[in-house]
Amino acid sequence: MHAKIKCVVDNNVKLSSKFWGEHGLSFLIENKEKILFDTGQSFEVLNHNLNILGVKKEDISKIFISHGHYDHTGGLMDLMKYSKAEIIAHPSIFDEKYKKTATEPKYIGAPFKKKDLPYISLSKESIELSKNIITTGEIEKTFDFEKVSTTFQKKVGSKYHHDEIIDDQALVIKTQVGGVVVLGCNHSGLLNTIEHSKDLIGDDVFLVLGGTHLVAADDNRLSLTIEYLKKYGITLFGFHCTGDYASFKLHSALDKMYCRGYTGFEVLIEFEGYHLGKDTKCQ
Image: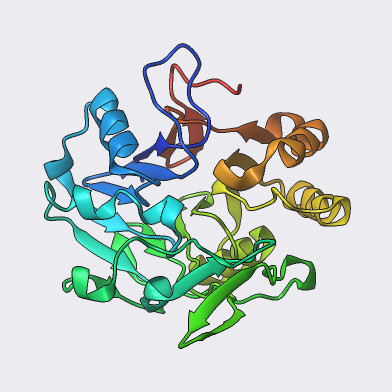
């Protein structure tokens, strides 16, 4: 197994670089093909950063969408003007997704409808995306403290209902020494996702990277998360929706087992594990 994972879009950017940042997330996974994981919030930022990385849009063979929120889907429609990549996602990415506010619910769903993407491949199940890379499919939620906040809503007809965000998926890369899990926003919960991924590959997970959605986590949830990561020796690279406070707590407790990611962050996955790109450092 040999793959590179490069962060194309994140809230934070590599220091002294030409990358742009925004509230969103996108990764490029390169093995024998180029797979784009999410498309950030805007095509402008996505396109700029792909150019900085020297990636041709027409060389992207697959696009995996982790879930149907605007900050992970915003660059997709314009990207498809240049790419003939296969698009893979969960059927519920087209749900009308909202977030509660003090006044009216705010729309936070994807900026497109199902009719705009007639050739998208939709699956609730785990599928093989590429050699040794699989999607999680719907993630079973077994840890009570990782419930999806009622802040998240979906509109059905004229009524709003709690959105369990069942379309939230991750990718799992299988290596000789265990699994690497790549997260979008991880609304399904970090521990839920790891346990689900372990079941899928029949092996342990040793590295997780991506948005963790710990930005609103209380100290109890953070403590339980840290305890779990320590117990199983799992390294975590937190991006996007991890948040400053959670990043501080995770780094304080996990030391070298935690690193905060950013646009331009690069990880090389190999048979024996992983190492960071030559110009990649924890910031």
